[in-house]
Length: 70
Image (cartoon, rainbow, N blue to C red; front, side, top):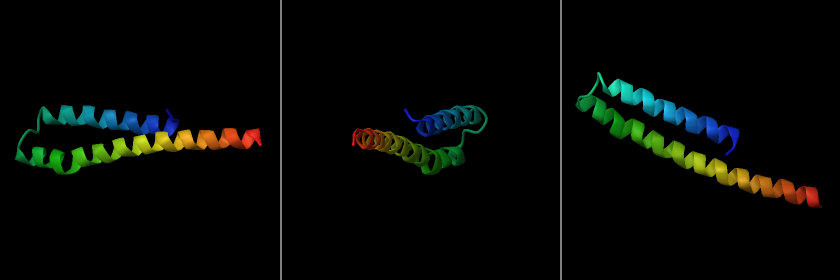
């Protein structure tokens, strides 16, 4: 895992933990709407970004290795 994707994954985990704490005192239709329309889509985008960062890291690693061979 790259440092950047690890940081993003850690931030995403921290955000979810903080949201769970928030729900202890804010659990109404507005909070559920916020989660559905803002938090969940952001989490999904961040997870896709992490996957993309990992794949890009693999490709860049292969390119670096090939450049060293030449």
